[in-house]
Image (cartoon, rainbow, N blue to C red; front, side, top):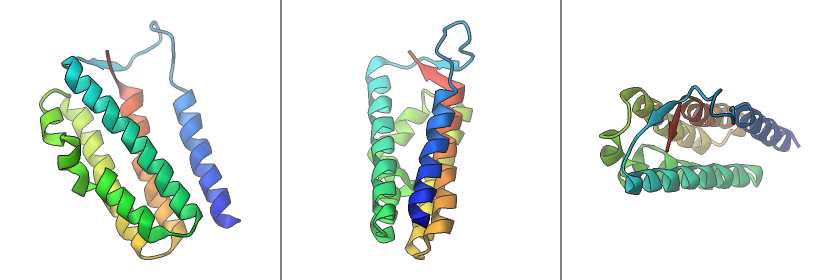
Length: 145
């Protein structure tokens, strides 16, 4: 029951943060990041996979399988995933600040993986929040078109 409550709070926080984004073009103060269409599609595919990975992490944590959650985090989001996502290629076309947020997300995912491997869910959830916080910060500050 305790893990279910933590999952609910994590998801609620993420959804609340995402719902606070503005939808009006006049109110949207995010920085526009121009990139070639192919790279934009690549980036969007990466972000969709990141969201899917976070969902899979939460599902596995809810089942008590922290080792599986750790593997997903490290190899789909963590520092081990950088070549898979073409991070060095993308770094050439995004602002440095945006890249720093992305790097912080990847590092947080690796920290989460290590914490999850210790087998105690609550500290792992706390680190997972650092992953989603980086996602929220990036989406709040930047957009592509």
